Length: 127
Ligand code: HEM
Image 1 (cartoon, rainbow, N blue to C red):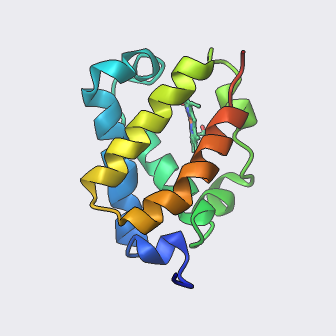
Image 2 (cartoon, protein in one colour):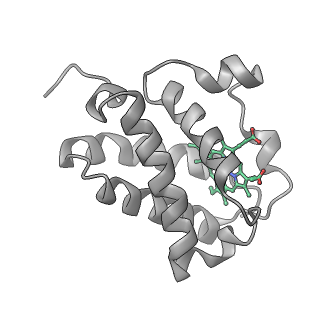
């Protein structure tokens, strides 16, 4: 076992940036994620930046999202969207693919599986 934070295990700021980019690239490419892709703007540039900022703090690095947006609460931004179990699972699939793409270690993937499930499930807006 390691004492490192996920942020450190991903290689710090650059690794978080790669993860956020790979996540939305996966959403853009995977037919299985078409429902949640359609909820997003055509350009994914801004949302890549926001996810990067969010994950930086959430994974144990600098709290970029909090500093910029004043909160870490994601409930309000997700309220307008119909997010049920299928949409949650599409999100998690994109994250699995992204972690794969950036060659995250098995240890890190195992560490993050539960927490990612919990936050995605928490953001559901319907059964
Ligand atoms: C459960 C399935 C999820 C779906 C379907 C979903 C979908 C969305 C959508 C449609 C937006 C708005 C995009 C826009 O403004 O153009 C959004 C925003 C965002 N999502 Fe999610 N999301 C999910 C889960 C998550 C999770 C688990 C995280 C973090 C770990 C996350 C992080 C964010 C962030 C940081 C924003 C930007 C919020 C802001 O406007 O400041 N999302 N999401």
